[in-house]
Every structure is written in structure tokens, then in C-alpha cells.
Length: 284
Image 1 (cartoon, rainbow, N blue to C red):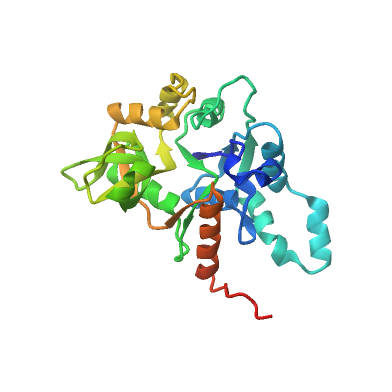
Image 2: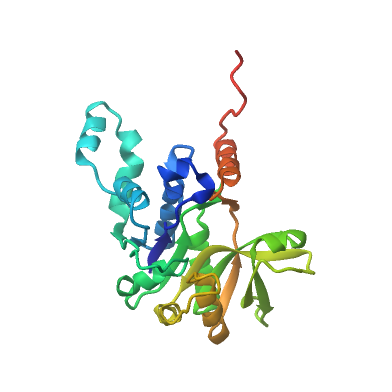
């Protein structure tokens, strides 16, 4: 299994700070949000991870974070700070990183990282996940590892992670319409982007975490741009699901969209509370 982490986009919702800081590098406590996605991929068994950043600052920042800095490591070691540097050192021991910078040819969208990674994927299964959101677990578990295990148990070609929201909020998300099976599994029947109406009490929503076989790559490579000009991963996944069984797997972690200031702040508050940190202001 390999993994592709989407780190594109200009982070317009974070402007003006988004001009200088990639949204994938926005901190959740003392780690960038992309580090949580990397850890989840590794826990699921993916030790070859590709990134497809847009050219410029996004590419430089993510590559700098994931490139071994021997001088800095020696500096920390000399001062007895090995524990501080350990999270970075562990990354380099646990995974190999490939960078596939997106071309400036007018193409854009969530499907582009997979399209660029065709040679990287080769004949392997692949995880596709976003870099700007968070599944917060308090039990040391991994939702991507759970996704892989659930797909294996259900013996389906693909699997899609889902969070649940009240039906009244379904219009804000991409909704996964399920098709039940006689074995009790929920399979993807249709992926609907922000439905105008939804009449069920709860909804499965797409949270950009998918596990697919190498054969699904053809569905990405055959994509045509949507009406908005974007190459959308959801279109490829929806087309694949029409021909193959794709399991809907409900996640355990608390989902946070860190691609906006409000979502990023909520994720930090939740992460701090999970670690028992005191959020109360210091008395003056």
C-alpha cells in the first residue's frame, strides 16, 4: 500500500497569513496538521508517501519539514534535546517521501495528485487523503488503519471513510448515499455534492480519505474537468463505485476541517483538551 497526501491549494481562507504559511503547515499544538495525516498513513501500513504540492511556498515548506536536517539534529543532540527532535527523526525512519510538484498548466483540483502519481502508484493499492483536516483520536488508534482493516474484512475493492452529521447539516458537505448489503455492510451508491434537500436524520459525509486498488487509477486518468474547471477526485471515486463495491466505513475520530480559521482553532482546542492542557487564561 502507498499513500498520496494532497497538499495543494493556496489557503485563501487563511489570507493574509496564507500567503506565507501553507495550510498544511498550520500547527495543531506543536505539529503541523499534515504530520497527523502522515502518521495515520504510516499506521495504516503505507511507508511510501507522495505529495503533490502546488509550486512555490507550499512546496518549499512541506519539503523542508520532511527533509532530514543533520546539522539541526546535531545541534539538538548536543544540548540534550533529542526528545524534541524525535518526532521528526521518527518520520525519516518510518517512511519514504516523494514530491510531485503540480505543473503550471492550468489544471487543478483534488484529483490532480492521483493523476500525477500514476507512475508512483504503479500496481499498488493507494490511500488518498487530505492534508488540511484532522481525525482526533484519544485512544492512540488510527482511522486509516481501521479503514484498511474494514476493507479487508468486507473484501471490497475500495473503501471510503465517513463521518456522520445531522441530516439538517447535510447541505454543507459531500454526502455518501449508502447501499446496504445482506452482510450488513454499507456500500457507496452515490456521492452527492452538497445536496439541496436531505430527508434522513443523519448523513454520512465525505472526509477525503479513500483506499483504492491500482485499477482505480484509470478512472482518475480518464477524468474530464467539472463545470467549474476542476478535476474532482469525487467524480473518479463515484465512477469507480458504479462499477465496483466501495465500502463506507464510519470513523471513530473526531473530525475537524482545519482548512478554515474557525475549524483550525476548534481542532487546536480539542487537541489541547485531549492532552489535558489548561486553556484558561493566565491571571494578570
